[in-house]
Image 1: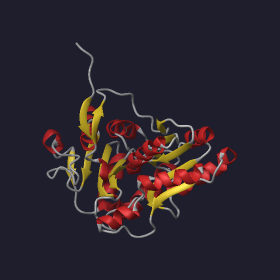
Image 2 (image 1 turned 90 degrees about the vertical axis):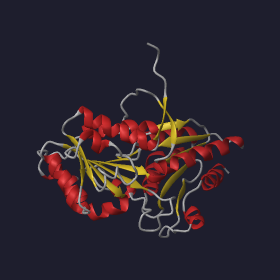
Image 3 (image 1 turned 180 degrees about the vertical axis):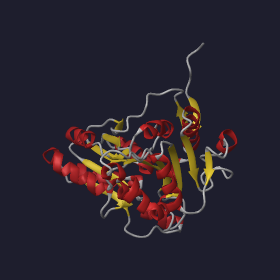
Image 4 (image 1 turned 30 degrees about the vertical axis):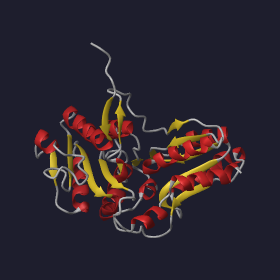
Length: 329
């Protein structure tokens, strides 16, 4: 037989195949959430899985995030491997008590007796004209919480292969899927090594400046790197992909090579993950810096509905390029 070739797919289809593989490989795995069954998921990720695996494995839930996240925690405590889908990150606030006070703390409070191997998936981010109540980027809030792992798959590879190690983690894992990525298409290798959830990845090597980002901002950073290259500036692009725990060593090693950094984060600047990354650079690589760390974040306003205002509020490639030029001088 000839060698397998890469296949064309989308981010949405890669996530669906990851779910399908998980359901096939382990009878303890089941998917639950609002409209994940008959409707196929609010964003179409679970389309067809109900027909393939049945209502015991793909469960539609009532409209109560606190209730079904709590049910997922209970199932995990009982030995199951639940995957809970919350439509969008703003709805996760209705389950924050369950996530923070139960899922994240039970292992610690029980002296290691009660593991909660739960995976919670949710859509995050703006850029789709969903206005102020459905455009949050709250990954940094959750990355603040000890006891959970926070993932932000930005590539087809990570969309396809992050779920399996997340399910194998004895701690709760939150997966943030940026809504702008679902239709992104490309080629995915037919087989791949398991994704390393402990380390960031360098997607483009460079020598003059480090562009550090995750999730929906990764493509903007790569576009900015292309534009900077036309002007003779070599930018290294780092995809953090795991937001808790942060791979600080990868970040500081990159800054040690380039001596400048731009941190790109779709969340608001104040109290953001970008602030944490900048602080870690200052703590661990201050004497490697030839310029202050630049941050590119969303405007400090509720996200506008009008498209031109939404785009103006969000970090864009031109903003990243401008920040890089300020750092390089």
